[in-house]
Image (cartoon, rainbow, N blue to C red; front, side, top):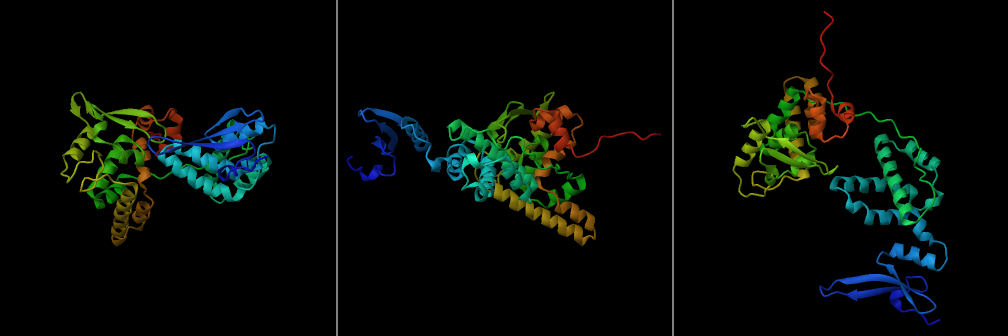
Length: 349
């Protein structure tokens, strides 16, 4: 058989890479299978899928490197994670970093439920272990779709660690202590997060164009759920309407279009918000310590920006209203995780 050209030597016999240069200068790459009869069969543009089709045409087993978890993880990271929300991408990348040292060199068909249970038990971060196993389960399901395995998902039926929802509630004293020490953009972010009940990332991305008539339109990044929050009642602006009016009226050097901006008018990034939060909280803790109130200082130190969302849910009397504002499909989720104060009850006498 005539020796292959250099650029096809990384491919199995009778499989070829086809490069076509487009008018814009980009190179279009695809793969073909050339049978003994000289007829070319298109294998597609994805190398992994092309190699699977090649193995099928050659009636050979799937190449070993495609069935090792490192290759499965690589493809999942390349093809699946980028399609998820920004926060989920960040979480999945961190979860893969934990999974890969343990599972990278194991064939996908060799992974058993007992191995996954052992991973669960060894991880000290129990809640994170649950998230990592959930990701591993999705990787297996996708690998089945890709034809890399026909086995049942070994994650199914593996017991998860018991999770205890965060139970921190920021009362008005704690809120005021941090709020008063914050810069104007932090105060506006706190107010907007509280009045809308949205996640920090969604609050930062709210724009002036999201104001539509009497509504503030919210698109949740994590769930892709859309909500319209009223800014007026009977023709009168409510607290949210007045807040947005105040935000829009604040003098700025430039107009970026975002609601939460710094004094120059630039969008407040996640890092900027964290820095302003940490600074305000540290000042509030120091003041409480200086006043001899160690208990308040400890309570303030535990306050996180993410606790504003459950504070909002906890302070809405109607569970249905709270659930709709937070964008939950089930009221039980709001009740179990986000409502952090007990029901009001009358005494016996």
